[in-house]
Image (cartoon, rainbow over all chains, first blue to last red; front, side, top):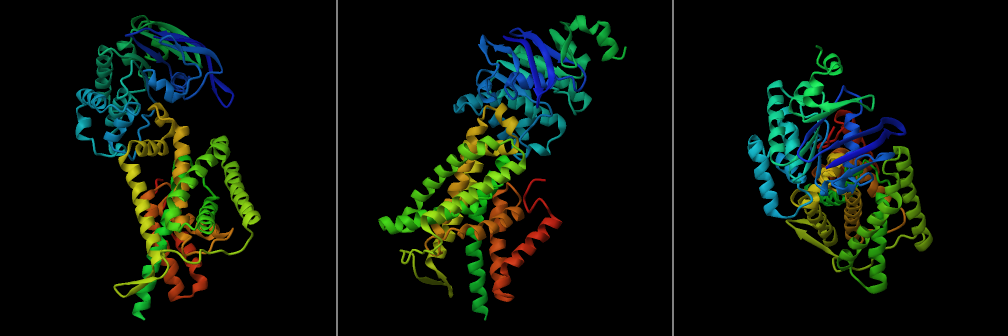
Length: 234
Length: 287
């Protein structure tokens, strides 16, 4: 479904990502894991068209999207739930969700998507008229994921969904991610919570200083020495 | 004495509505892309000249040429965006200031070259004359201009809050990157914001032209007031600009009436300083 070949990415000519390659097959949950500042979020920005690689290629569903603009990429069925949630703070929860379905004008489709999101996160229905900025961290994350699902993506990228939310909710969020996958959405996950991420991932790539340091299935990586030493403190 | 006071209050509110309308475009453009349009007053001047020439050349009353002027200014705003603003959208603030200030000088220079520095006025319009409402006298033109400004402000507010396109504009002004991830073409939204922002100042210019002189520098004072209004109301806030417009109009005429006409702008600027010191984000602005 997604194949990334040797992409280079950087800010103001300072390279951050060096020749990173990976792939995601249809129906998988794949994780990019690694500590803060290793360039995981930058990779997602490169995929969704917020940034463009200076070399390498990104092919999504057989289509080259290496230099595609962000608003075009969404239309292809790729949705990016960004780091730090990035809600529209002074708009209502309802409007935030509607904006997720910006590219469709079909009222029925929008209604169905809303119902789907409410079925995953029932609390969002009650919070509809509330300003997004007044929600708790966990609820904001639900809005962010819900908004990302409103475009009916085939491919969902989640950047640190466990960031800044209560530990009890973290588990709930990861359950939801598995649920979404069951509904036919392929998932690329960026996480610092390595244990949780590897538990639900089919495969994962360890990103260190802008390079792929290690790759393998979730189970393999959980038992690898590098992961245990660097991330799990075992 | 009391009659004069009420009279003054009314004229303050009326001019305040116009200030608010001029300021709405300014605050919208700023809210969307953090660019301060120093040439805003010059677009007002251009709109007034358009209305003037429609009258002189075709005998069109400013009220009738208003839709035409609005459309022309909308296009001028969009063109300005694509030619001048787009290349500097992520440039340092200083470059952006130079560009919009450059547009100011350009438009003023062109106006002086084409139409010289004379003060011109449309001699007689459909709305000339005065009316008395509950004992308060006011020019019909002023009254219509104020009503037009309120309607236009209301339309902008409705557009932003209740239409899909308006929602997209708000989304871009809240978080450009997140808006792009929703599939919103932020470039097109910027162009639209310039179109609407300049069109609103076009409406203000068209309305003003029926009772105000037009000359190449006419924009400077209105624009200064609009800046005060934007800062008071909060950068990027449309309702804030509306309330602040009325306050600025009132402070201007009341200080002119109670203290001295020559000092009226000083008091507006005092008010501005006071607000900036105490509440830098304005009445309704985001921090």
